[in-house]
Image (cartoon, rainbow, N blue to C red; front, side, top):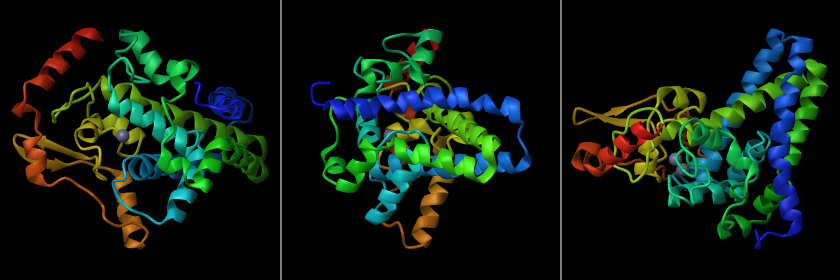
Amino acid sequence: MKQYSQLTIISYIVGPTLIVVSHLGSLLIIVTGLSWGAVLWALLLYIIRMLATTGIYHRLLTHKSYQAPTSVLCIGSIVAASAGQMGPSWWKAHHMDHHQCSDQEEDPHSPYMPFKGIKGFWWSQVGWLFSPHFFPSKLPTDVESNLVLKVVDRLHFIPTVALGALSYYIGGVEYLGAFFLSTTVLFHGVATVNSLSHILGEQPFTTNDYSRNHWLVAFLTLGEGWHNLHHAFQWSARHGITVRKGQVAYLPDPTFWFIKILEFLKLASKIRVPSEPELIARARNRNCQNSVFKAEAETSV
Ligand SMILES: [Zn+2]
Ligand SMILES: [Zn+2]
C-alpha cells in the first residue's frame, strides 16, 4: 500500500464500510415493510446502477470494448459509484489484477486462492474486501490522468450517500430501506461474478482459469455471468455468446443491449465483438488444457 496516500487509503476504506452499513440498513424494511412503490424504486436503482457497473465500469472503462464520449464515461462512473462499487480507478485496477492473475496467488478474489471450498466461496464473495487484497497493485494511469474520474474515485462515497438521501427525501425511511436493500443485493450480484462465475457453469472456451458461463449470474448481473466468454475475449462488448456442437449461439445479454441503445443514440461506437471463426477457433474442445482446469475445479469445491 506504499503507493497510496493516507487520504486515498481512508477514502477507499469508506467503501467496504458503506457496504456493511447497507446490509444493516436493509433491516429497516422489517420495520417499515415495502410498498409497491418502494419495490419499484429498489428495482429501478438496481437495474440502472448495475448497467452503469457492467456497461460503463467493466466493458467501457476497463476493457474498452467500445468507444463513448467522455461525458458518458464520467456520468456512468458517478452512477456506478452510487452503487457502492467504489470509484473508477480502484474498480479498473482491481479488475485488471483479476484478469492478469486469474485464479492464481495474486488474484484479489479467486474462490481457489488462498482458500478452497466454502471458505474460498466466502473469500471471493465478501472476505477479500476486508483484506490487503482490497488495495490494487497499482492504479491505472489512463484513469488517474482524467481529473474528473480521479475526483470521482477519491470521493466515490458521495454519490452513494447522495442517492440514499434522495431516497429518504422521496419516501422517508421506507425508501431509504429500499435503497439499502437494492445496494446490498447489487453488491452480492456483482460479487457472484467473482465467486460463482469461477465455480458453476459451462466452459465453452479455452482459458487459463476456472471462469464459467452460468445463467443465474447472468440474470443477476444483466449479462456478466457469461464469464467464460469474457475471459476468452476480454475486449468483447458482447458476453452472451457460446459454442454448442461446433455452432456459435447467442445468449441473453442485457448489458450488450444497453450498449446497442447507446450506439443508437450516437453515444457509443466501434463496438467490438469476436467473429464466428474467432469464436470457433477458441472453442474448448480444441485444447485439452481447459479440461484439466475443469477437472481440478470440480475436485476442489
Ligand atoms: Zn473472472
Ligand atoms: Zn473483465
